[in-house]
Length: 492
Image (cartoon, rainbow, N blue to C red):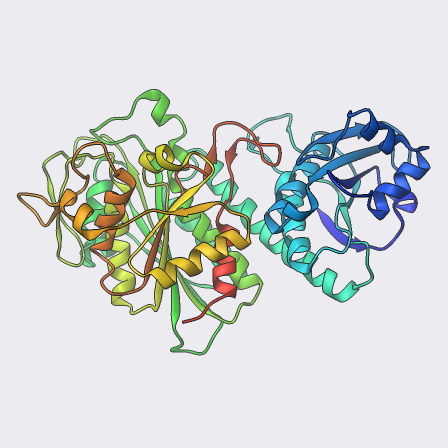
């Protein structure tokens, strides 16, 4: 899809369809007012009759001619004082998703009338993601990327807006890469092939890549990760990506991703309903891969280490058993009480590695616990930490991008006792049903030492069972933008 910045009036635009934004409060913007004039006051008439109010994500398609366009889509922007970068992303995505329901050669979006560059960037990113769904294997696609997307910003800041559009394209492509990796089924994406896809991305973008196979994992004493992989015929992998945007030896940010390419639950077998969407359990690793692509293409002045542990959690004859005691890379032992609490075992070895490599700060992402979804719902990620200033930075990056996140407590006097084992240093689940997202994070905390670390449980927002106005069901690609913002805001 080609994307370019335009300055032409909405009534003179060469496009098959145009979308114009309308706020719920206040006067019509320049583009909407021009369309309203060309249509004899049709938009104001719809507003007066309450047929269209401009509330968030409200769509009103008008099958009328304005210039060359044969369709005008009115797009609700919500209340003006509530609009932000996240609103720009979701609104543009909703508009593009609506128009991408049919093949169109050229579409023009008139949503941005003097937005800050950051909003424009997010809007373009949203428009790109809105054109792509989860229909990877359908003969008749439900979404059709446009041949050309024209973006109007209502001003003449050609250089600034052009740069924002280019950056938005990078972010949109990165999110779609993450979404495709997550949406691919387990027979297509498994540890070896996900490592290959990551290596292909790295090769295109000048990122160093190192892939550890099973003999290397055994030699490196990655006992917790290897235990999870024992039940599968697919051998595990660790993929290590290194982006050098700063001087050699400069402080490094580590992005750690859980990559369970399919999670049956192991011998603690999931139900069919609980297992059906478990191709999504690689979302942490996939988010890391997408973010690394964007960071490299944006040429950010930072050193970033991306690492993912890639396994299948299956029920083969050698599968990990309840009561097994695992020895992680740092020597700590873990008693297995539930084989479906496997992601934290994979992350334990990864966190030990990046601490050994003396990174400055760590953020990990994982579809780790259903308990986090119970606590926060499907749209909000939970974040937990051993370092409050670092957690504040992670949270600020997410909120700046409009990606909902909420911090959960890590009180040692309350939660540390819950993962203690009678036979090992710790057990892989807490006592009882309560606080499951936190006790999972408490296990991870045992492997980061004093390195500032934030754990983001993306079990809810990473994969949607139902569509949203701005997104098809399936993988969301959320937190790619947060990770990129974190790299942009980097303060070692």
